[in-house]
Length: 130
Image 1 (cartoon, rainbow, N blue to C red):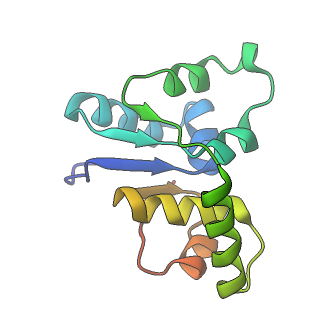
Image 2 (cartoon, rainbow, N blue to C red):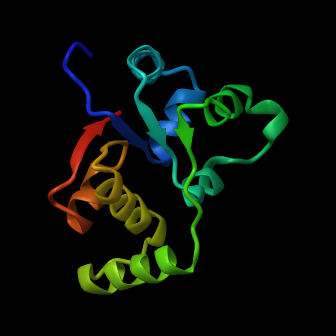
C-alpha cells in the first residue's frame, strides 16, 4: 500500500467480495482506513449485489457495521441520476452508475475489480484495482 490515501474510499462489489474472501490487499486497506480515521462508502446497491447469507458473511457484516462505514441509500434522486448517467454513457448497469455518482459526491477513491466499466462511465474517477 504505502502511498497516501484520500479521506474517503468507496468500495464496489468486487472489493467487498475480495475483502470477504480474506484478500490481503483489502484487509490491509481496511486497517489503513481504521488507523487513519478515513471513511468507507459502500453504496446500498453494492451491498445488495454481494449480500446473500448474512450468518455466513461475518467479515462483510463487520465491515458494514464499522463507525467509519457509510451506506448511502439508493433513493429516487440517486436512481434517476444513475439512469440518466447510463443513458448518457450508453451503459445499463445502474449500480456502476451509482458507484460513479457517489464517488464524485464524496471525492472518493474507488476500489474495484471492474475498472474498465467504471472508466467508461466516469473517466475522471480515481480507481484502484483489487
